[in-house]
Structure formats: C-alpha cells, structure tokens
Length: 144
Image (cartoon, rainbow, N blue to C red):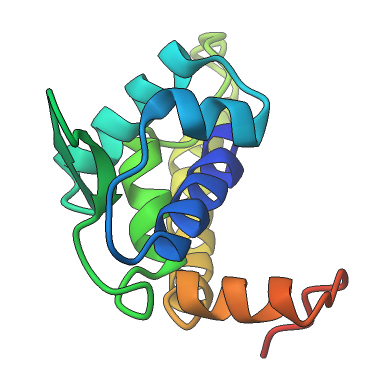
C-alpha cells in the first residue's frame, strides 16, 4: 500500500459524510490539506473503478457511487494500485547463479500470496467501518 491508498480512504470517508449532495475537489482539498489537482487525479482513478461519480457545472462535484458499507478497503487498494505489482530489483542475475535464476519467480509467488491475504483482510473493512471508528475517536483503529 502507498500514500495514495490512505488519501483515497480519507476522500471516500469525507464523501460518505455528505449524504445528499456532492463535494467539490476544492472543498476536499481544503479539508484534507492537499492539492486539488492531485485529488482530482485520484478521484478520476476512483471513478474508473466505479467507487465515485462526478458531475460538472452547476451543483457539480463528487459523491460515492455506492453506500459506505459496500465500499471495502480491498476495492480501494485495487483501484489505487491500478494493476501495479510488487517491484523486484532490475539487476539481471549471473547466468551461472542458481539462486539468481530462481529467486525472482519464488518471490513473485510469495508476494501474490501476501497480496491475496491482505485483500481478504481488507475486504472485511468498509468505509462505513472506518467512519464508525473515527467517530468513536478510536485512534488505535482496532478493527476486527
């Protein structure tokens, strides 16, 4: 996970709090303390994933495409990663190095298992769950 993930969760929580209307990227930027252009790019990514919708012109802005209970953290992680996989070093191993010839493939399998385990856990936590914890002022976020 990266900073885009935590920023996306923050954005989606703000949008979840606005039940009736839409929020502008400028409002979101002010609330989060981030650049509106950066947020619009991230929101566009979340829109492509079907997590948010937008409307331009009068009354425009962003809103959730689903209820907060339906948007789980695994969906957010998958959206912001956009097919990004774990990065392995780029160094080509020596052709005679037995370890070098096999370690990359083994690591890819390990990383795939770790990603699947993480997604299983994240699938149990929704934006609604995050907001519930926030409003309880539970800074430890002991979910589960």
